[in-house]
Image (cartoon, rainbow, N blue to C red):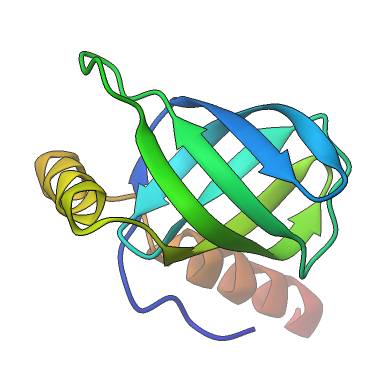
Length: 121
């Protein structure tokens, strides 16, 4: 797995999801200018292309990501990379991310370290 190059911020935005195989609803769990982590009951596979309409709290106009791709899926969660969205929407995401506190990036490292220590004991 490649390390993430940008911090993500925790959010709880609802989203409409459209893929070649169907449509549905989901919730963004975290967000960066390059992508997000989502939860949904929709069955998706890595490599599936999506169009997203994201409802941003306190904003009338949804954020539109014309083209994105699912990079990973696990237990109803999936990681999405944003491939194409307007400059205006990109600026909106960048402003949102800058205004919110980032998720804890060390959580994975802490888990890996404690697992390693337990095995080595």
